[in-house]
Image: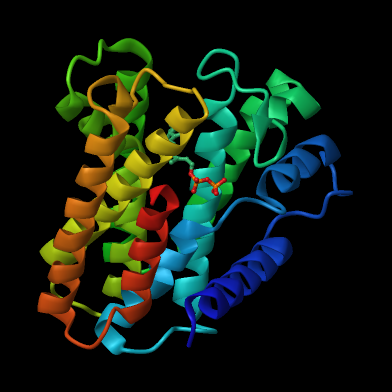
Length: 273
Ligand code: GRG
């Protein structure tokens, strides 16, 4: 199977599940239901759901299409991720007017509705998680503390070194990515938890550094951008080192499995080639 075909299938499964799970737009309170759907559809890249499926493959060597636990878990993670974006865009936090190629939820529906739509997305995610395996649920819930800590560090703490940037990235981005890959792996009953965690953090690191490099190329350097502390070339070198470490780790621990996970790593790293 090719990576793009897998990615398309994951999107189809997760989106069709979420479409049936979220309340219809016309149901009362319609404004809340419309705002939630506006945030979720058509949505973003669905990288985290993809990681859940890829995590499962690391143990079983096949993709879990149609697996109810996987679909619920991947959908819950995407709802949580979307909720964090809705809240992150609010004027009191990052104050972004645009998200996923359209006006942010608070721009379209107002701040009051955006706050509550974010809360509702989280509540629907929790409802979904109540039916998944306890180990998986714990991994996801534990990761959320990190996401919040990363966000507060990003908003309020002085960021003084490249290491501190990487810490913010690890919390804000890496934690939920780790929870995604590890959830799929745990549903498949995998035991190499430490390796999968390390691989997932590596993915988060490459994802975020490449994002910083692409932003910098457009003249955007955020507070927690690695480009405040090193050149674009140095950051590119960091990506290449991290990539080679992660690919070795996958080969060493999972042998012939993880082919499309490695392709995903390469695809993300190549965004800045
Ligand atoms: C988790 C309880 C709880 C609270 C959240 C608001 C907040 C507290 C945290 C914000 C976290 C945040 C916005 C992290 C950024 C993560 C990130 C890399 C976003 C972009 O991800 P992509 O590129 O986006 O995967 P798409 O749109 O493709 O899904």
